[in-house]
Image 1 (tube, rainbow, N blue to C red):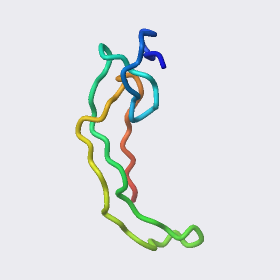
Image 2 (cartoon, rainbow, N blue to C red; image 1 turned 90 degrees about the horizontal axis):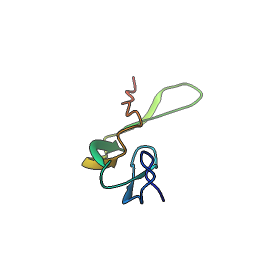
Image 3 (cartoon, rainbow, N blue to C red; image 1 turned 180 degrees about the vertical axis):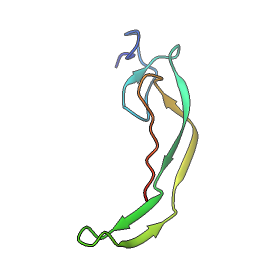
Image 4 (tube, helix red, strand yellow; image 1 turned 45 degrees about the vertical axis):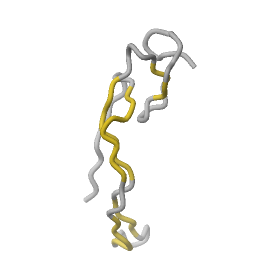
Length: 73
């Protein structure tokens, strides 16, 4: 796999977009997974709310993809 930005050998994969990232272009960003609600598709009523999640403060990021938080509500 090659780096998205410079075409050098990738040392890892961006957690957010899956692009290859070399050591020179590697950045870190917070990744949160799992928090949210489950809704009934027919009524949009909350069936279950869960607060189980994992936070990774230094996830590998390519620096070019846009990280956009999504808030339910």
